[in-house]
Amino acid sequence: MYLTEVEAQTFAFKPMNCPGRPWSTARACAPIATCPCAAEFGLCHRYEKSGVLTGMMRVRSFTQDDAHIYCARSRSRERCGPCCASSSASTATWAWPTSGSSSHPAPRLHGQRRDVGEGERALAQALAAENVDYKVNPGDGAFYGPKVDFHVRDSLKRSWQMSTVQLDFQIPERFELSYVSADGSKQRP
Image (cartoon, rainbow, N blue to C red; front, side, top):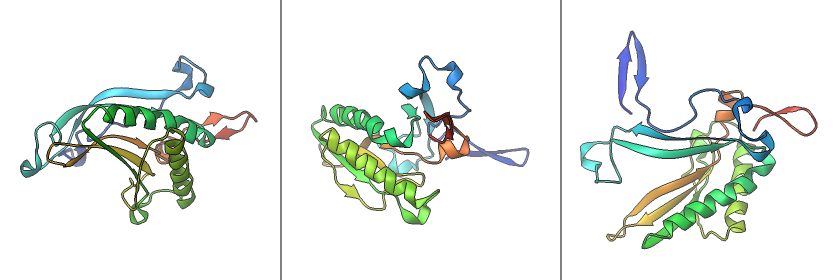
């Protein structure tokens, strides 16, 4: 990351897209049951060393399209499936598409182990439901939850990550997000 210090406080330029403010369903165009989504095209900055810069794939600044879907845990498979299918279809337009599924790395785990297992099962079921081929990459997940990476290979047979479908169990906790379930109780998405 690009870091700077102002008045004895360290700040970083935006390295990735994540919702940066609390979000209210009152502003949504549709009811919560239809699964609200926060999305943006955002400028991201990464401090890549000069020796690894490679034209369009490893750069120091880029615009990334990013969406966060908030849903009940019971609907994560249903919501991840179309995202996986879309990513798989878009990488299939390249000459050498590949895909993979990453499991959560235990040493960097944030949150509960049961969340990770539940998320890995939901992603596997979503991939199967959409007929997306994948292989599991143990220990290659993110610190906040399991993910599926979609890669393409270039003419030199190098693999490049193009998109990711991730289950993030940390944002709902950190932003203290909740919704009212059918039984009237508050639940964490």
